[in-house]
Length: 506
Image (cartoon, rainbow, N blue to C red; front, side, top):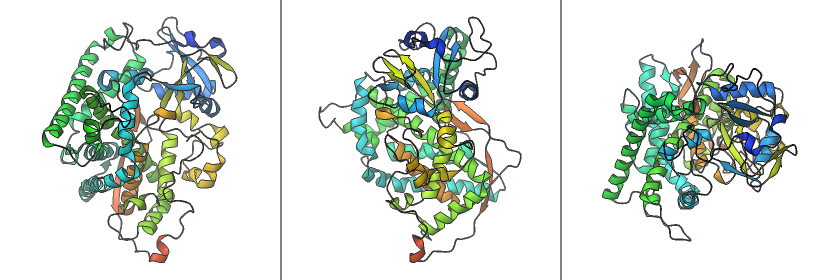
């Protein structure tokens, strides 16, 4: 950590809000501040995000918290978040949680500072890897991994066991990104315990989360040593993967091939060996952790709302018919299934916050002056629950919020599960295609039954995941095969390939 942090455990160059917000005193803060420690009354180091959500309900669309002598500004209102999405005035800010991952991910796509040139280089080199042509090439591998999941779930069902949804979704998404991006198989479904890569990854994410709450190195020496060991394991695993590719020669033009062999189309520059390692780690971690959470939350809500599951299942039967393996283009025709996923991401965006900083002196929302470099953390779950946008029932699960007419009626920049602007998630269409495909396959094969006494609890490790979610499965009888005339009946008008999350800037 020595090269990325100060002696306080905070990232180099960290700016407390007093430095950037000239009228900070106008922004509300929690009551009962404790000298030196700050706003610690009622706070939990295990659920800092959910603590902030509760404070947002009490304090309003913008508030501040103080910890260890430093002030942090949080934005929870949709109007202020939309203002922060203005790329001409604001840019990505690498906040504490992301900066705490720099020892492992360095200047990878997710953790790079704006001034680091490797971000733009990697983005331009890798963007073609998420084109429609490339995505169609990944589709068969996604189907193969989904088939392994369903075999695993069939064995659990036959044995009368519930399935561990978050654990199995993590296996699914890790294998998917590893195979499609890097030609590697971790053998996750053949293991009784998580792959050591997953254990090390969860360790680094959890450590980064704890540093947010306790950014004092001497209080976390043992945890820091364990984190160093986790980082070393991640590095060794990825170095072995890269070495094997160099020795075996090019693969099928996947992301790793692009990282190793593709030059920037204009400058001719290539990614360095160290940056290749950092990008692979970034994709393996970010490329599966968030998608597994999104699928897990979606399955929870489908089990809680059997009437919505029945509608979505009927759509799958109608659109896919009796085809064993749906084609790439058929996934985009599952409009309701996609709305289920979007609504789960609205309530629990698995990357639950993003930070923005002022490019120049400006005024946020016409009210709060900000100096150049001042930053705020946007609480995405609160933006997604703003009653001014989503109505008085914003806490209710309702996929029809994403029906085309409802989407068109909403202001832009109100749905941000993948961040915003130039630094938004490069793999969002990959994740959405994968998740929609998997939900469709699972709906077609199973009825889901939640455990009667289960109440949703959310685990925080920078990303969000439902804790302890188990489902019991019932294998469906074969659905009737629709006639060709029925196969497209009931579909909503519009291009099958249009991104349903539409609107200027979304």
